[in-house]
Image 1 (spheres, rainbow, N blue to C red):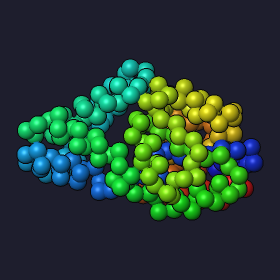
Image 2: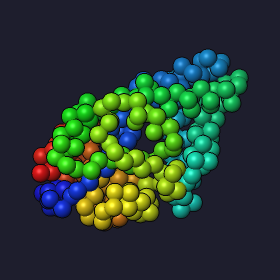
Image 3: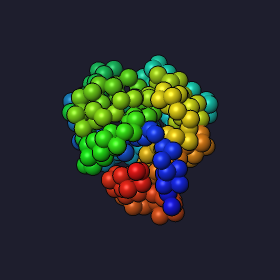
Length: 235
């Protein structure tokens, strides 16, 4: 029995994670970095850039963990400057390369939605649930959500740079629950990250659905592999 089912009709709001749950970069980030990098004289392959991106991203995650998960728009900007500089360290004009990449990922066209997102959000909104997105991101997420018609049922957007805390900090989840004026036990979180979404949400006292589209987290109980499975969990 899932956490959502156990909570039953007590759930009144559903927050979804952004990247990896409702939206995905399209083309993938490594391909975009490779294309932009080539325009700035980089000779690195998309495969090499993918490895570099993962390593740089994890280093920034570790930095934030070591610094109490506090964040801001300034910190998020610095995070992405650091990542781009580390990944594309062979470009001629690093500042111009960063600006191009930073702008690209603010565009709705740079993202695709999970194939079931529109249906799931429409049905849940029709059932009367308050819907939102809760993400470790910055102000650019607002332009992405506003430009994707599939995401229109999302009436609340909780972004780490605006809240001042990154998931899995309990303060982030508390801010999301406060945004909709509900106790944590009535706010369901759906996300694909074990630490940030699953463990973070549970520690904050909220029911969580772990989204595992690739079917790899076989050791996690109550997981789903299709977003539409959320509909069967909520009346």
